[in-house]
Amino acid sequence: MDVLVFKTNVKSKNALRDIQLQLSQIPDILKWNLDLADCDKVLRIETISLSAQKIIDILHTLGFQCEEL
Image (tube, rainbow, N blue to C red):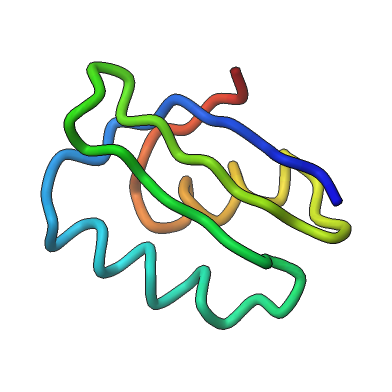
């Protein structure tokens, strides 16, 4: 299992719901959370086999900035 950590520009609970819809469809994600209170809006993902680039691509497709920490 890997833990991937990202800095994002997600700012609202509505945006968080959009992300949730996408991430919940990916079976290789065991657990994830996004801290809207953190200044870096940190997204943490526990995964079996996903790459950081795949997560970055998903968030970019949704219109968010995302970079691995």
